[in-house]
Length: 76
Image (cartoon, rainbow, N blue to C red; front, side, top):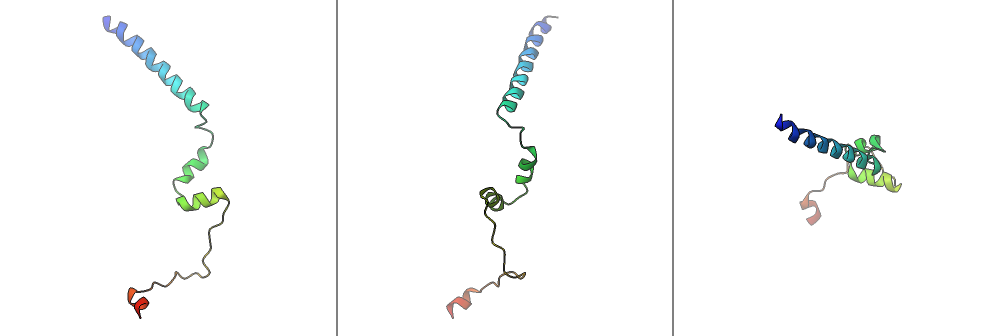
């Protein structure tokens, strides 16, 4: 019975802290845009920054990747 005098106030304090944490998260607008935040992890950072700034990434002129140059080709 004596442990109840200790456990009940501790549980009430934890409850109030939880309510405060939820209130703070809502007030700081952490739940406003849940869809875009989940997609940001998947997208490439550079692509995401370009979309945020309104810039379009450069499109390659052909469907083939650029040809790699050997270091020996530059020396000739």
